[in-house]
Amino acid sequence: MGYTIDEIQNQIVEEFSVFDDWMDKYEYLIELGRDLELYDPKYRIDNYLIEGCQSRVWVYGIMDNEVIKYFADSDAIITKGMISLLIRVLSKQKPADIVNAELYFIEKIGLKDNLSLTRSNGLAAMIKQMKNMAASKLIS
Image (cartoon, rainbow, N blue to C red; front, side, top):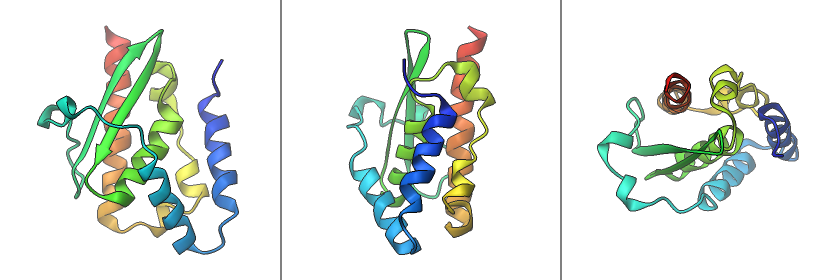
């Protein structure tokens, strides 16, 4: 059995707590983006492009044994790091848990306060899209 959304968020908060400086946190975020699982180019189409992001971000999800597995890519390295965190938290979770998740790690690691307005809006758009995908799985 995998970790719950809250357990994963707590792990992320713990990982980021070792960094005092925001530049170090950005470097870690960039590293996480580089480690993101390869994205299948056939999903690099407008259907999977997230509206509201300054950079280009593609996200798709598949149902796998009652959980959703998310895959994503971005043309911006910081954004790629942010989406990798969201995938880590929300992927391999049940649709209802994703829809109802309160993503408190964003504030606890200081991401909310250290992003530009456009990146904050993009992060909100990514979360909304991933939750909408999960909600659509609930309906079917």
